[in-house]
Amino acid sequence: LADAAFFSGGLERAATLWRGLLADFGRRRGPERAAVHARLAVVLGAQGDRPGALAELESACGMDRTDAAILSAYATAAFDAGEYDRADKSCRALLLLARRQQSGTEPAAVAASEVLYLAHRIARTRGQEAQAAEQLTSAFESAAASTFECRRLAAVALADGAPDVALSALGRRAGSVQERRGRQELFSEMARVLETMGRSEEALDAHLKALE
Image 1 (cartoon, rainbow, N blue to C red):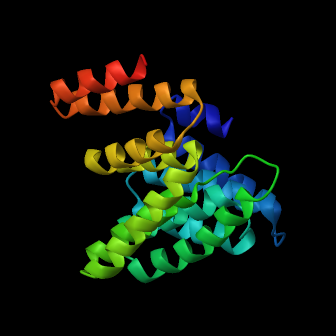
Image 2: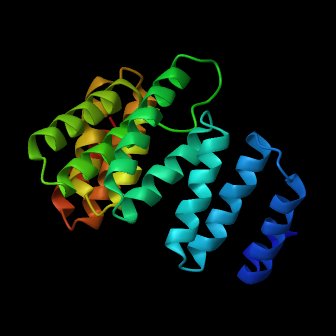
């Protein structure tokens, strides 16, 4: 019901329903309650209540430090709120979790490259240029090693208004992929980014490479 209310635009009702579910938990903690805090945070964020959303995500992280999606949302919310120490601390924990997931059998919820890109943004905002450059280099290295990592880095870079970063990530990965279809898909994605940048000749060249 809370999800239905949220998607229909009934934010106040959705928030009330999620708070009611939290009350039902009483003193119980754990992953299930953490998920409800995270859902409430989404509603509060949609209402423009950033401090409230951040508080709910902090509660969620305190109950489940193994949920990469929740930890990622908290790190991003902390950064957006200017809470750079909290964002940086969360990034460190999230990077360990992302790398642990890489070695597992389950699909990773978060890519190391996107965490490193957020760490780059934090350092850049703080004026720590050397550290920011180091984090971006590490993000590119992760992206070059995996198409999943590459696409996640490209996505967050584009959302951040940094198409050059997305383009570089895609190009590095395309240069290292041996499988023809995978390489073609990456060149096609590069072409689309170049088109949005108004670089039509380079976009055409990427389209042609995708046909090779």
